[in-house]
Image 1 (cartoon, rainbow, N blue to C red):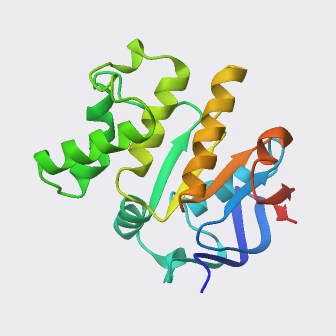
Image 2: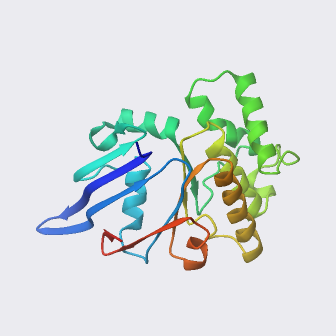
Length: 221
């Protein structure tokens, strides 16, 4: 059974008499351990697809099965639980809390799982070690470079051992050197068995993946 199964999925937004098909009859599968890039220009539907893959939104029609669960019809609370248990997010803007230091940011998803303080501290420390930031655990985001902030975000995404790492333009706010380092980090994680879905508009970034899905006008090829 595929880790992700998307079948005849569509998403329609309505504004008065106007209907916009952001996604139009999309079907594909992603296997456990794959590294998949979804590439498309602005307005192609890739952000809508990312939101659905990340259980931040639901389709208008069609099936989305994640790790054996049909998430297409889940309510908001159920979707939140799926996000917390199954998906790690890495965003272009890092999305770190600036009042918290690195290890506190990484601990956050574990707090929502109800993990005890001592255990989550050790798990967060282990995750930061994996991304080479064990000497920066008490630094706040303002005290870290862009590349270091993105490494903290990767540690936070992985600390709960999710089935999927969903990376949305993860190098978009980074210089070339830092961007290459982050892509290497993501590749290393995939080599270690993490399933990666990378959303991008950049063909050079997409070329790092094993499989590339192209989206244009809401259709995937």
